[in-house]
Image 1 (cartoon, rainbow, N blue to C red):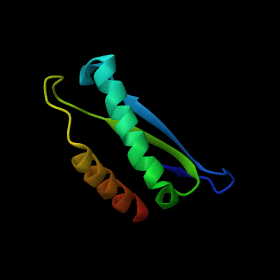
Image 2 (spheres, rainbow, N blue to C red):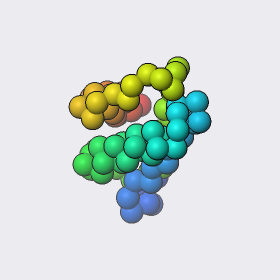
Image 3 (cartoon, rainbow, N blue to C red):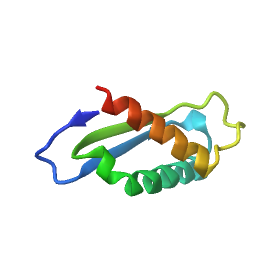
Image 4 (cartoon, one colour):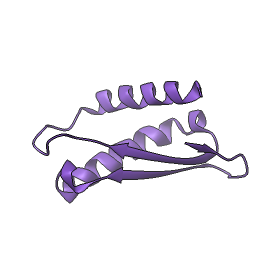
Length: 82
């Protein structure tokens, strides 16, 4: 997380590697994360953010949208503490 007040809006990049699964699976997760973060853009503030995703097995089912939202909220809460 790099806070930069000179940026007009948050800039977010995603790092989702091939071990996570097929391109379809990675893109689905990326779209879901983008939707969650778009709704929470005010909470991010201006800056550059990199979101990395780990998954031990490509056969593990994707988490639900609600679970992803909860996980992102937890990450944002931890990030505000810094």
